[in-house]
Length: 243
Image (cartoon, rainbow, N blue to C red; front, side, top):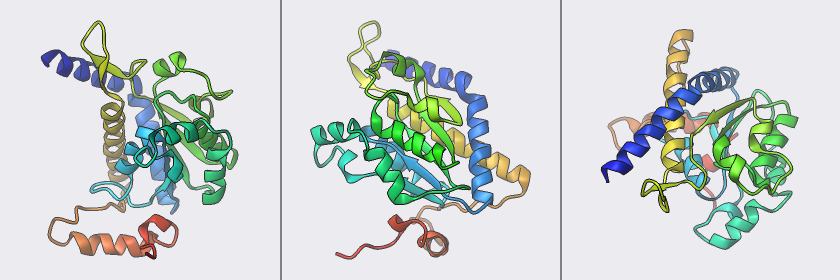
């Protein structure tokens, strides 16, 4: 197991080396959007929806984040169906059209391979609307992935954050890996690094970021209620839905 820990730490170091400038550039895009009262639209499919959850309504996370998704890409209800949906042309474009984001909004799209139509179309459609697009992806994995779309997610991005995920995702055992996928670990770390960079930039600019706090600490509910009142009209997922 020590070998696994060493491998993961090595990949985290690779991510730092490859993506430090991109993470700073992405933080500047996010801060510009938030200062202009824009919304951050976070997208992903399959297990990349884990990263969308990481961005949304999360303690320490910025409040103006809207999940950009379709229920069919969630594998918990229908695993094979979610794979089919991610590969279906037109779905990603329709998701963006339904949400109708516009500048100064910004999009963050998570996809390790970046080769399926769903994330590619989301990035493409957001870029066509004049929005900045941050791609959190692995160029190494993308090169080896089946090309199910004519372009890649990275082709439509303003900034590309390289997660350093190896082709195939798995890293254990060393030399002949077949288990222990690392894409969630690396992309989650990339997002946390982005939040830390955003915090530093906001401090330098004198901007008070709207951030969620844990509902399990004293006063947390009151802070979050003020943010809910501020953003729920533009982020439907923050409003209760009728049973």
